[in-house]
Amino acid sequence: MEAVELERGLYATPQGALLYKGYAIIADLHLGFEEEMSRKGVFLPPAQLRRALEVLESVSKAVKKVVVAGDLKHQFGRLGKMEKRDVEAFLSAAQKKGVELVLVRGNHDNFVKKLVEDAGFEVVDELDLSEGVKVIHGHKAAELGEVTIMGHEHPSVALRDPVGATAKFPCYLKVPSRRGVVVVLPAVGLYQSGTSVTPNREAYLSPILKELDLKKAVPYAADPELGVVELPALEDLAGLLVEEAPLGR
Image (spheres, rainbow, N blue to C red):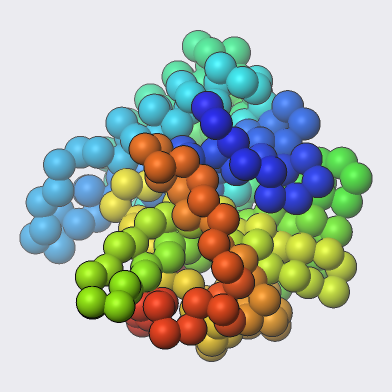
């Protein structure tokens, strides 16, 4: 698993997991998304759980502590039958691999606390790791650490070349803050392709990002085949970025 150092001991992997001192931090699995879409008449192949298990398998070879930075499940107002089955399958796989798992609660993680705790894992609102490194979900205002790791935005970078062809990749986004840096994780969920990053802070949903200087933010495209590729700061990508309206989280 090739990884690129983003910031003092934080290593980004092509699979969307951030490695830090024996921890793997992932975000936005959105298990059960297919069930919610089927209720709306859109039928998708069941891929969310498979993708989550692939990432778990990959990181468990390197670490034994996994932090889910929010949105383990998808539906807001209920725990669906497929959601329950998929969450239990993911937690069972973590148990079998001897992984210590912590869920940092996201805005989609209603009705899931008991399932996680019954599996022997912990649910928290935020998590301090070490040396000023903090993990949150990012859907509400929070006190930042020297390094704050968050999800919620499902960032991706979409670029247009001079002849008009476009390419889009999930990405990490490293944003300067008054305390140090905020690192936004790509979504693990296969169907959470993300909203394209932009220097316009009003395009983001997180109140945290709305307060930061996005012009200086640096995207790192992440792709299992291409690896992790550092790109120029957003202000230097003007004219190449394909911007999209933000999607609900």
